[in-house]
Length: 295
Length: 287
Image (tube, rainbow over all chains, first blue to last red; front, side):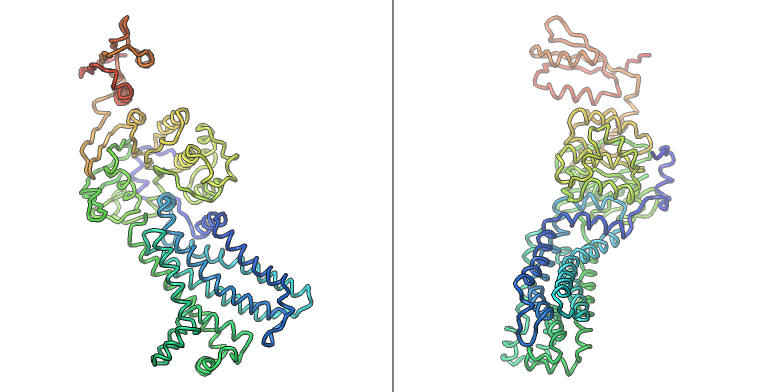
């Protein structure tokens, strides 16, 4: 036990170097310990891994659609599902996380420990990224093991690039979720805002709204700008490029992408831009979080 | 140790802390009292750097800086309501040990004294413990930390009487730390404190250095007349060394000056039975 006398207390407080302090590793470990027991993580893991198991058991890798078969066919299908599931899951769970902890009183207690705000915030961000990506890594590993067992050629390059794209997409939506959580004063607001944002981003996929915008004679550069800025769209297009380098599936708009970026350039954009976007949004979230009341 | 200068905190333009100024010296053991909404929890949160505020809070003569982790390393805090943390208790204890310097052996000893087996609950999620168990774990962590200042917000609210008594004993044994304890049960923390501060609408309305007037070894003579006989109350007074008349209506006896608050707390429980009472201002000395 600390055997300080009252007379020496003032000296101790004025000599902060001797005080205990929480580092990034410990902060991450704490968040992992907390989230690993959360229902959202269990449900999310079950969905992400369960979908892969479902696709494997339905024998989708044995079918052939537009020339895709084997593990490529399996991964293409999984990508499309991931694009629908991953962003929504990340947004909803992350947007609720900090504001939920604030409402529950977790922040009041945990932030009373000697942990600096940047360490706490970014430790939490990194832990969430690990948590979100871990089940996908498990799903991809399952697919690879299944492919090897069935004698399929495992497209390791594609698996690696796809994992990178998923990581980038996760970073973008994690950053968005942290920003929403920092701005919201209640879980209801955070939940509503995250659903609205997801719907807007889905609506801005090229299927519907972009065609309407073009028909309404918007400047094409503006429409292309929207498509490039939408992390969902960049993920979708880049994941197509991995398996369809000529972007035949995408139609005429493929010319714009291939003329301006090329295959490697676009894949690099689709990996770099969402990560940068996520970090900027999370940084904005930190800025907002650190300047307001923490609880 | 801590200087608070014109601390003001507003929520929706309503001042919960209103230009509150206060100095906490090293060795101060303060009972912070006040009705609901008086500003006790807001003051604690401001001290812990959880709120933005106007005015200044300076720790140990250092400049005002919001949420200094080094300062927080010297402050142990127990909130009014235990947080619903999902992590296992063992993980929380490990965090307190590695990140906040809590002593593992001391945590085990304190928890044992409070009546909770840390090894038994280590794997259980914290939020699944009972209210009393949660509070015991939080108190254990706080008391095992090398803190110079203990901030407790209604710390004994969820504790059973036995654990409450142990908790008070543990606090009394922490001579190395200053304390700031918010409690609705002043009689409970009264033996611990040497200063009582009352807040009302965000201002200090009473700052009483108890020890100056109510010293150890000094007694005040009290007389209590009941409206009707009440054996449990008579027994409680007998434990204080009071003598009663044959009808069990009139009692006289000495009250240790340093335990005046605790005695008044006892009277408050039987307030409806008391017809008349007197507490002499004259201080008696006993060897």
